[in-house]
Length: 229
Image (cartoon, rainbow, N blue to C red; front, side, top):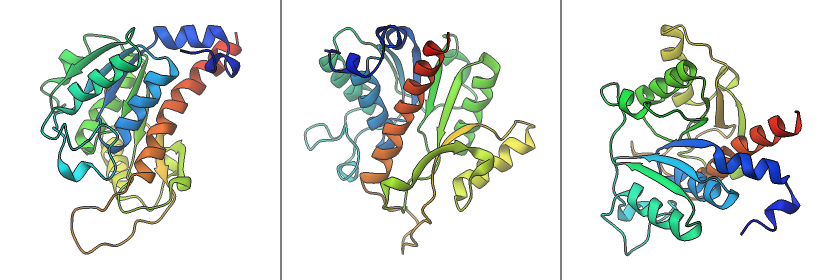
């Protein structure tokens, strides 16, 4: 299934992708597209963490959601989809909300890369802390709600972000715990649109762009490290 992929990357890079262990936390708008990309790129060892079930309100933006799987766990729907695309994939699922009480058990396994596509500040902090502790590479997704332009999503570091309330809160928490702010992040330069409700508005374009770039971040890192040897 990777004939066309191998026209763009070296075979050694693809083989490395097969071997790498990925942890993906959050399989909503961003995480769904990140997962789809990882599977189609050739990653085969992926652990998925999400406590949510698919809801009707997910249909406008989340790749895994359809009118026929509302109520099903997102992790299980992702696993089924991934195994149909690539039967060689080894996909582990955890239907849980990741917090300080259960994160230790998750890290009994080592992960080469972590994609943080969750919405909770404390979980983001815990994942960054564990990534540093276990020498895993992490890419953290910041705010994609109340934005329209997919072209404004960029990969940068947390200390270089602005106009993002989620980034500001995360910087504050990391500073408080003496954690460096040069963590790789996915960030939108677009100013959030002011809405009339507390719940953020969201369409498919921006989270999809973030998910694609999260997968690209990992691919590019592996490609760079493979070709540099």
